[in-house]
Amino acid sequence: MPSSRTQKEKMLRLRLKSPTDGKAIHEKWNPMKGYSGEFPSGNSPGYYYNLELDALRHWTYGGVAGLKAVVNGHYTVSFQYYESIKEIQSQCDMRDYGYQLSVGYTF
Image 1 (cartoon, rainbow, N blue to C red):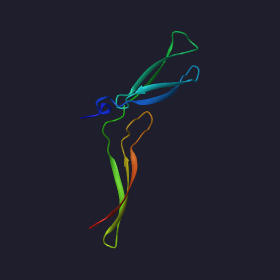
Image 2: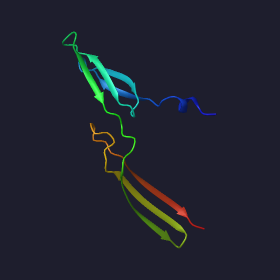
Image 3: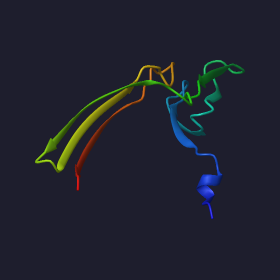
Image 4: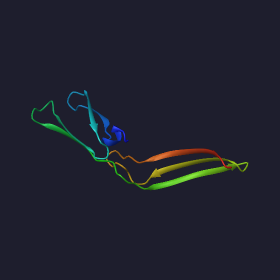
């Protein structure tokens, strides 16, 4: 039976500072759908400050580089680095990247 968390959309908390008084604003948003918010401008009644964030890309592409060592014919150690070429969110210059370290034994 699937959990209720998998049935609901995954939402993250977005922490913003109010452009008028600097107080923290806590909003929920779905990174795959983007965010759009409108906040009143404290200095000018009737005017609003708009904030929009583009959604994260669903797919990206990149490259992987790594090293692997086999010691005594049985033990293996490998290290890989991967990085995307395409940005996953252009407004914030976000890219996927990561490291992977594996240690193993071959029978």
